[in-house]
Length: 356
Image (cartoon, rainbow, N blue to C red; front, side, top):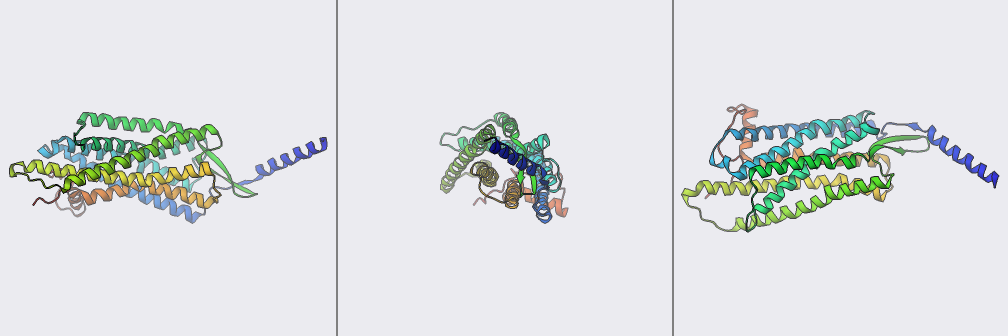
């Protein structure tokens, strides 16, 4: 028995020594793959930053106009929604995306607090955007019921501020679970990846609760609310309403509400669809533990991140398509036709349907 025990101890010591002797490699996914991923994310970040900055500035210029359309509560709330979403996108593209690109190309932010801080910043602004969309969708849902319950401008501002605060607090839980996780490539080499450490039961529970509270439940609620609002608007749009000439301003406001709400619905689905890919994939890998080689897992995670951060670019496209005055603003800015930096155009900034 003593001989067997000595043999077992020697075997364990040998295995431990072999593990220690393995050589560290920095993300052996191939330089070309890492360069393509970093270039893709950098392009997404640059386009998203420029688009979000332009829409933020354009909406900010609306404060200078005092027309009936601009002082309407819906349009004031609408402009505030767009600015809040754009600000989240701007910060995401100048903070989160560059950090991810650096982490892809250089052997930094892979361990301990550096890893936790970087990963916290990468999930912070998407979480804030999700909470913003919750406020927007609930307000639009209540405002389009048979008995409308509209939020005041001050209430909307407070709710959006709370959305930013809650999003910032909620990430503290999953932030504690991030660390440099060792990945044994073969018998001679290993690497370290900054990601969710699923080695402890507590970490799994924290990430599971975060995923349910910040991803699953809000995603289901947003989908239901926006489909309900879209169906309501579609049914109302089919009704034929006769508006007198002296109510033309009110007719324009109703049309602006219709188009503005459709735009907010489009922004919501443009976010929640790509937003779901990365967390669901991470949860799948953490709990199912499928047999996936390192390169495939590496590419899938960063392509999913690229899909998530492409939301700001998609938003910019939606703004260009749906907001006629924004297109005019961009045309003046690019081609120098008039004073693009002080457009101050009349109206609400939303493309209105033709009134016949």
